[in-house]
Image (tube, rainbow, N blue to C red):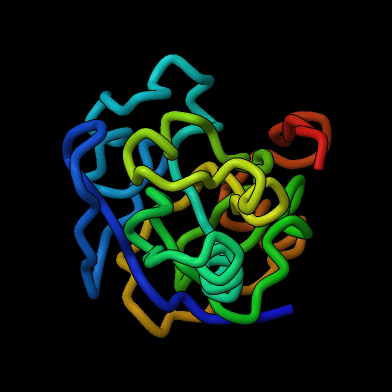
Length: 177
C-alpha cells in the first residue's frame, strides 16, 4: 500500500478557518507544528494525546461527501490536517505508516461530529460517517510536503526508528464503522 500526501491544513485556534500549506513539520508526540492541537488547544483537546495529534482524510472521500450533500465542501472544511490520495486510511488503524520521513501510528477512525456541522452549516454527519478519515500519533517527526509518499511501515522498521513495538506498542481505539 502506498499513496500520496496531497494537501496539508492547519489552524492555530479552535473553530477558526483552516489554512492550506505546501509544507509542514510533524513533531513527535505533538502533531503538526502550528496546528491548534499541537499548540495545546482545539475543540477536542481533552482527548488522549495519541488520539488528537494528527488527522488524515482521503481526497476522494471529500469529493463524495460534497456530492452527497450537494454543496461546496473543501478539504479545509473537513478540519483534517492531511489529505491523502490512494490510501486506504481505515486500514492504517493499529499499524505503523510513514508520511514522507515521519513515522506515524493509526490510532482510530475520526468520525464526524455535530461541531463540524455547526462550523460548516452543512449536514455532514450522515455523509461522513464512513468517510471521516483517521486520527494518528506522530512517533518520529520530519518535515512533510505536498507530494510526499504515504506508505506502510513494518514493525521491524518502526522498532529500528525507536518506536515502541511488541507489548509496548500503542493500542488503537476501535470506533464502530
